[in-house]
Picture 1 (tube, rainbow, N blue to C red):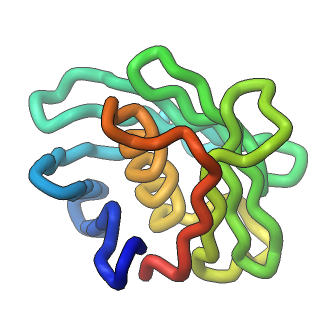
Picture 2: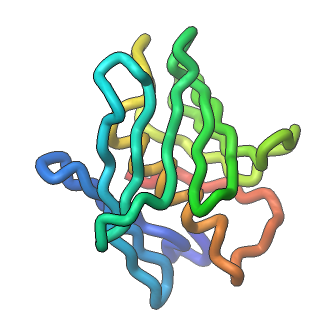
Length: 139
């Protein structure tokens, strides 16, 4: 949020496993596909069916992992209280922190997959400032 207006909006459609990401005058539709029930990996495709990235959960705990969008790698960490942080690959200071739905003791939920996809896509936009952003509850 900035000046009471959302900087990025992510709308998840559970039936279609899709995420609509809206930022100012840009809007994209992405689809989230599981790479296998036990793999902990998800494939992101754009509205044309072209693979643009993936999410991989850490199998040991399910609360952290990496997101690759257009060959740019980000790492994420989520705690059980719902705090979500996205780091540049190898970075120590988060690029984005936000409060999402509290996690139970399981892997990152489908809603959070779409949130991660939307936030990482947003970070790739040329106009985005690379300062650390703290976002309030988005959904």
